[in-house]
Length: 149
Image (cartoon, rainbow, N blue to C red; front, side, top):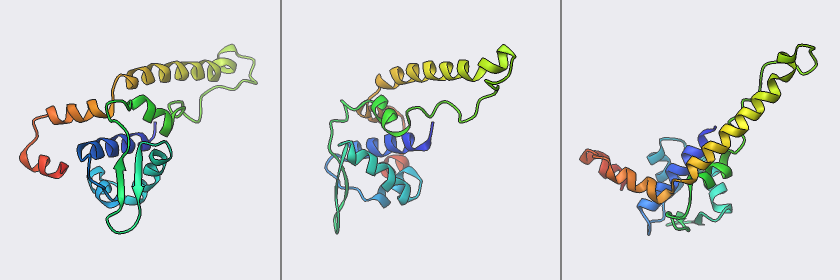
C-alpha cells in the first residue's frame, strides 16, 4: 500500500468537514502534514475521478463534488493503489526443480490477491462520511478541534 491512499482519504475527509469551503493545496497539505506538491498529485487523481472540483486563481482550490456518505474507502483504494499490497519481489525461482522454490512466487501472488480482496471488502464498508463521523466522535482537545477548521 502507498501513502496516496491515506493522503486521498485524509484530504476528502477534510473537504467533507468544510463542505462549502474551497481549500488550497497548501491548506490541505498543512492539515495532512505533507508537501503541497504531493497533495496536488493526489488531488489530480480525485479530480479526474469526479470526487473533487477545482478552481484556479485567486480564491481557488479544491472543493468536494461528491456525497461523502456515498464514497467508500474501497473506491479510493482502487483509485490510488490497487495491486500494491503484493511486494515487488517474492522469494523462489520458477526455473528451479524444487517444488517449493518453483511455486512460492505463484502461491504468494495468490495469497496477496486474496488478502487484497478481503481488504477491499472491509474498505467498502466505510465511507468518507463515516470517517468524518468517527473523527467527530473522538474527544479532541480544543486545540485539535481548532486545527480541523
